[in-house]
Image 1 (cartoon, rainbow, N blue to C red):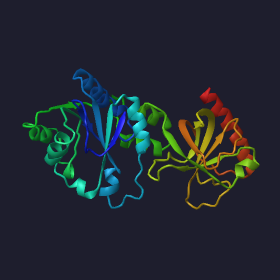
Image 2 (tube, rainbow, N blue to C red):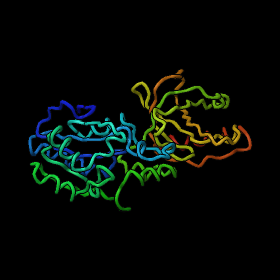
Image 3 (cartoon, rainbow, N blue to C red):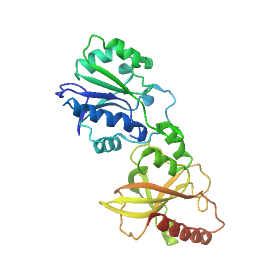
Image 4 (cartoon, rainbow, N blue to C red):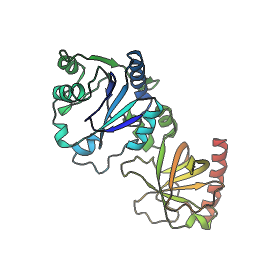
Length: 309
């Protein structure tokens, strides 16, 4: 997959195009993206995904401090490449860009710059100034511009339509099973290992504290999780604790993200790590002593090994 920063000086072959944020690149997006790849092959053209950075909500919403998303741009690129997308165009989103009318976007960018031959959009898709661009608008604006428009129904689960918002809600509740089912893969958090208080080491469970790559990356709800840890192209089982560590800390309201990696004793401070969430083991608990905490962590380890093997 070729990644383009902006839409100038492109040389695409009969581009079949779709537009969206695609947060999570989840199962709800698959019908659209698979249709995109199929149509491109049928028309002997190239599949093109257009997305935006930063996320439009970070630009348009005044109170955006607590906004979180399922994927960083780098994670999104990896997921899209696995779906055999030919080109990803990343357009810088700012307030000036947000004011472009939908028809001007279609004419000046989709047609003049990208030379779109076939546009595929999702169900209930909107774009352009104030979200005014919908299927009817696109068809009206495209009448004289010589490209096809197609709408694809999103994938639905037994629970209903799959969306980024319901996956985010599930993760915040610690509902890893549903989130992973809707994503179609295990939710992952990546970051850099930073130094902590080293309390885990004193009870036989040294932990690596993770500083996420993006402040807007959604961190699942507090609790203990069975995880797979990816480091140095190797995969290790482990268990992750998310929360305030109430047994050893005062209630400051701050949350830490710590992972104990099984059968691993290397110094990895400052290194990159990626953690895939597989199962939720339990809630965060305040124990009466470190001994009680240690006994529970031994049980957590047994549960994790049972779940992951």
